[in-house]
Image (cartoon, rainbow, N blue to C red; front, side, top):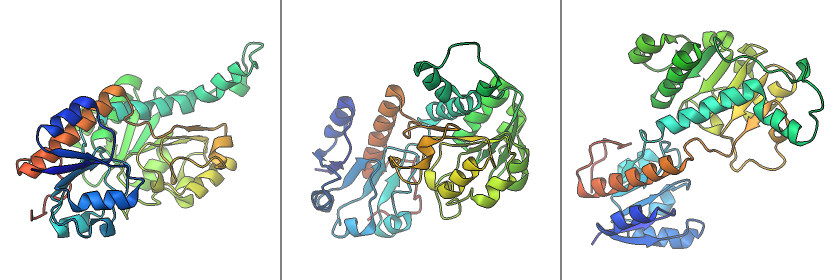
Length: 321
């Protein structure tokens, strides 16, 4: 019988689904020795937010598939998994709309200073009609630059163009013809996007090429009144450079759902900045979406173990062992 290691709590119906196909062994990923030992006897594993390094897979000779409950897969050494003949699956489709909602929430909150002013009101500071000191900036009709126009980037572009009449610029490895036709998106080089955009939104995966993609040089190319939005992966931005840019007014502000270190350390300068909206990596964190992701990941895993899965495979060139 197949043995599946579950290293993240799963909805009861998803766990029931897995148990109908295999023996399910629950482990605490923080207990690394027990986790590694369980992997040695497993044919599959499912979970999220835990780095699984090559050394953890030594001796896991029966392992055929890993299923991550996420769209990102930077917690894995994909080349090593491929070499070992282990299929890696992810959940790229089910979280698109909820994550795009989060991105736009960051845009609106940052532009209209929603979090800052809500705290200001709760602190008892609202004693007269507000003046310019509390004004924000418009979103409608502004220019949004999206770095990476994939599924989520496209959903953000739809909200921007159709809902807020925004001018959409984008960079991407290839042209997104649908976004160009339906939302009027224009593909440009990164430097032009940075120079022209009122909001710069990162929607790229974390790869060696995108790590530190936005650093001091790129921040200087942005408009002084621009706002940086990052709901992709924290290390795509040089956080020290961003902090400096926010301190000295190189850019207006930032809306961040991801950070170089998560959870964000309590002594991070970002937490003391009024021009920063900081969220605890909630991109896909709705009841409906997280359940759908878990179910999708479970179905991915069983399909991969049965050799019937045709989508959501990260390393398609893997040779099953």
